[in-house]
Length: 243
Image 1: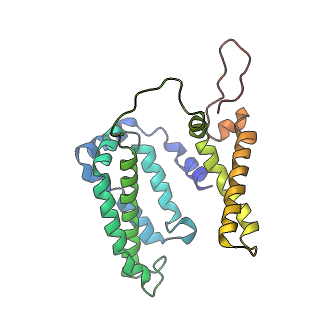
Image 2: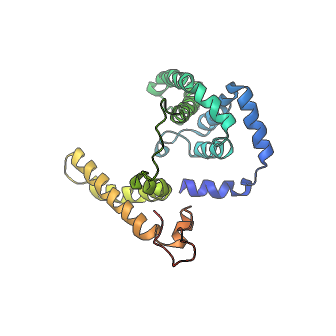
Image 3: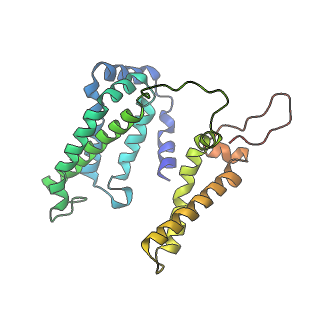
């Protein structure tokens, strides 16, 4: 639901002038330390609006900032190059900053909502540490492999090709399914491991079936879930839906 809400909020800005985004990306390329600036709004949102347990410790509006940052900057090579170079350093910085939040989280007051200077500082440090970890993860995952493998035409894994197209629909579908199964399973008298296994297995099967039978095969649902139209051969009858 948050993803849909944020898409609707940012839709009017989808035509954000590319020259402005380009200037921002160019500045980051020249001064990599600017990669840390987006942490300041995140720190302010978490500190001033409070942290929420239901949103993994972040304020819900912090996710809008993450979404907007990705929309504006993530696909620009001038940002990706310094991110790759700084990945290890910002990762270490994130660990240090997160460790610095420990005194605030173990204090007697509620660090999620309290308005004391210690609680505000704890939430701000949490926001900056989170941004550092996002940069580190993106930078490390974006690094090229050490030894490139020779191309093997025709050997693309059908399973990976299927998942590449299904990733977003599966992500959108999984939460209500997992919550529904958890609602019926968690209260049962059974070992925690067994309940976890049942929820995971049942959710996986259900989500894949919903995608395969309710999303992938229909043009309307493909469009609603952000998928491209199913490919059709030229000059022939409509083909089976693409993976």
